[in-house]
Image (tube, rainbow, N blue to C red):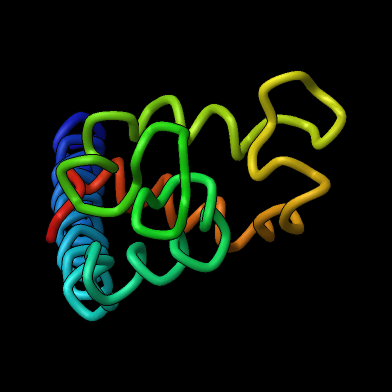
Length: 121
């Protein structure tokens, strides 16, 4: 009788655990769908234009690696991600201190989240 009681408790615990994990998974999926999608056109293009011009925009006299198109940005996205994440006093930090203010932590996160999402257009 005691073994049967323990078996019943174990079954209830397994079922309850399974139900709560499915609910948590559904909740996480719903939250993910409700987040606004980060895209180049909606979020990244203006961020880079405001922080990286004129140096990285040839039509504005830039002589550095171009960030003027999504193809340009995708080609150097990991390098950009690394450079904007550095401390402002580190060699290689961007944007160069005398030209533009550093990106905010939220802007850095936005760029990194966009890269992690596969750099959608």
